[in-house]
Image (cartoon, rainbow, N blue to C red; front, top):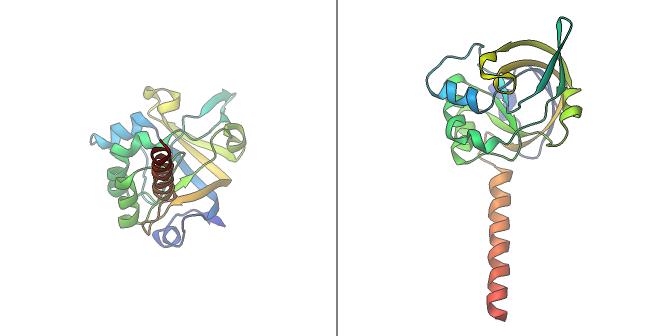
Length: 193
């Protein structure tokens, strides 16, 4: 399905775990430094209301007067778990994009506020960069290019919902299922010993 900006709570709450989505509109990048900066009480240089944060440290180069994105793959999201739930609530985010999933605090914030976690395919940095049709700006460049907030205009940016605003989490379900299977295997090994 296509998800067009603006990203309203109503649109986000219509999404369910497993939905394949193509995002169209504005995304902001944010990694560890940005999350800690916001968590520590600083105000963002952009309005994050009804927006999305992409856990990404892009490779962006200047070609003449234009910024060109060469690679924009997702970074591992769980590193932001200490901060993400508070940032979702405080700044009214509607989406978080990354890889690997997030934890219970983020899932609860998504349920409370109407936000989802989207998984982007790791290892596809150039493919995803091709879906970025423009760079509107960059903020907090003093943190370094990968840690700055980049404003990306995206078209048909492919993601899958893996944590929704109804409390469902593919990451939690897979962890529980694999844990149960591991216990079965260990029990079987113990019985044979």
